[in-house]
Image 1 (cartoon, rainbow over the protein chains, first blue to last red):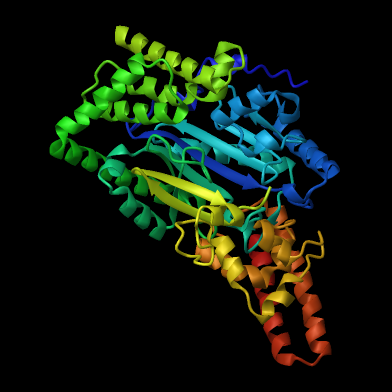
Image 2: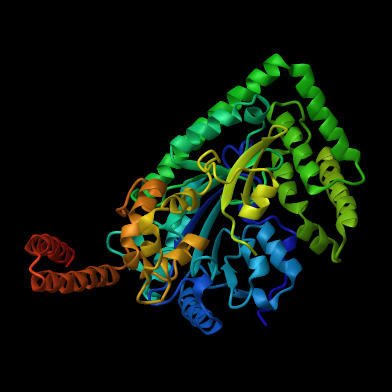
Amino acid sequence: MSGFDANDIVGTPGAWLDGSGDENEIVLSSRVRIARNLHGHRFTHNCDNAELDAILRKSLDAARRTRAFARSRYIAMGEISTLDRQLLAERHLVSRDFLHNSASRGVLFTPDEATSLMINEEDHLRIQGFAAGFDLGGAFRRANDLDDQLAPDVEIAYHARLGYLTACPTNLGTGMRVSVLVHLPGLVHSKEIHKLLESLRKLNHSIRGFFGEGSEVMGNFFQLSNSAALGTPEDVIVKNLREMVVKVIQYERRSRELLFHKAQRLLEDKVWRAYGLLRYARSVNTKEALSLISAVRLGVGAGLVRDVPIQTLNQLVVYIQPAHLQKRRGTTMDAQERDAARAECIREALSRSNRG
Amino acid sequence: MRPAKVHFTEIVNDNMVAMNLCLECAEEKGIDVNKAGSYGLGDLVAGLIDDTVDSEAERISKVRCPSCGYEYSDFKKIGRLGCPDCYDAFEAQLVQVLRHVHGSTQHAGKKAAQVGERAALRERMNVLREELSEAIRTEDYERAAAIRDEIRGLEAQVEDDA
């Protein structure tokens, strides 16, 4: 047994998702992912169980020698419940792929959850560094440090011309994806988001839903990231995204100002209706909750809603998700029960902040 | 589960929804899967790979990786390679994909431990040396000269690193 107890972590949002940090009105968190594979092995999807085990053994040996994981336990996906796996996915510590594939797969993360390592994901090693708010440098430093600590103890698949070799050619080269989770209601409501999408594409960046590739956009939360990993050094990839996010923040601010200038009553009504629903609703699904939280966030940013800290709303984004609701309640719930528990969780958080 | 082949983004009620669908589901949603290119940022890879449909396609799809036995057609099907050595085995086919995805075919940035890097260069030189003797055997001197130049370039690189 890995001895993992999800109850140890469910009560806190994790240091990087605590909703603090620079520009936290617009940027919730920053993340850097580095993909690595072991030399002399097939890629994960092409392995039989024996080879997956061999990769896991070598990777764990290396991980246990790192400073980063001196106080961390390895969590084997096959040894924890589906609900616990889902909880880790909601905290972005494991990918959704791990919900379905669990054999010889697992994760290590630091006590603050800001550095993590998935073993036998699409690539043998998926290193992640996180930071709260707009702090790509901090996220990069964490991920890159772990990569450096692992390097001496494991032989990595590397090609002199192509760089780090990855299962999917989109990650080839640096193996790095740098991203921010941003909230862009201004650009969505002013219909400017299409233009942003277009220019991001031209600048070789991409935009995705809350849970990354293939996930739906909810509550106007987006993930912005680099799409090219080959041919540009890591520090330049980070710099390019940082400069782009600075512009996106400017555009978002300007859109919000214009919106409030042109349609103040309409927006104020939208914000306060959302606030009212969140304060008093008895049942709400994830999608609606995120959409209402989005409107209240907009109101907090504009100085309309003064008694709810932005941090509380950022934390709610994590807490209202299905596995978090169930683990905090200590019981499994069907969709209807979860909707009720979600409404209660939100009411409590808002009335707490209301009391100050 | 069927592989996702169609990637697109749509705007619904001011919300952007990104989707990855298999061909069957895409058709169910009324998407003309033959009109590739009109779908968002999507994974260019799938579209690009599907575009190489010509007389060469049959031959190319049968190219096999000597290390893991993966065929190029396997990559076309699932968008992932079989093992690290596949990159050398399918080098010619992948160049176009890399150019479109990354705008580059040459890594820049962090390097794996020097040991690994030099080993990779030596490995490439060994392959080239075999190709060189093959070219000489078949009296293809133009090709032999080109290979010799490439080997000299790599030798210089190995010495620089040492």
